[in-house]
Image 1 (cartoon, rainbow, N blue to C red):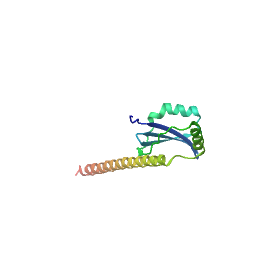
Image 2 (cartoon, rainbow, N blue to C red):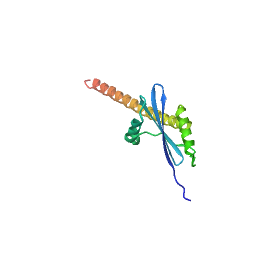
Image 3 (cartoon, one colour):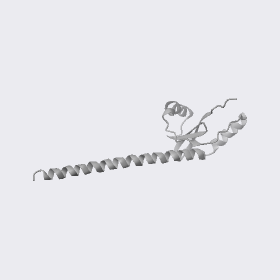
Image 4 (tube, one colour):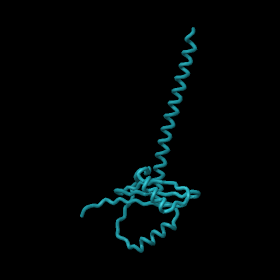
Length: 141
């Protein structure tokens, strides 16, 4: 039998005071990537669907984290009970939290590098300006 690669996408919407937050989980080849979206006011189902259609390709997913993919046929009533439990639960899974944290840390590092480069460029510009002023002072003598 052939190995079939499963791709799974899941969206969890929950209230994280004071905003409604959506967490997109994308599982492909045993790797979990996560993207977080802040909706603001409680989104309606059609608003969520419209957001997915318009913005899914623009989402910035976190780096992939290893995860265990379970593959089994499940009873529809069991699925319904699980869905109800998930609605009652607050928050997101720990793997998702790890992936979001990893993405946050990467963004932080990128910001640090960018701001450091800007700071060095500004210092160099000011140094060049001072050097030019020195040269202009000594031109007349």
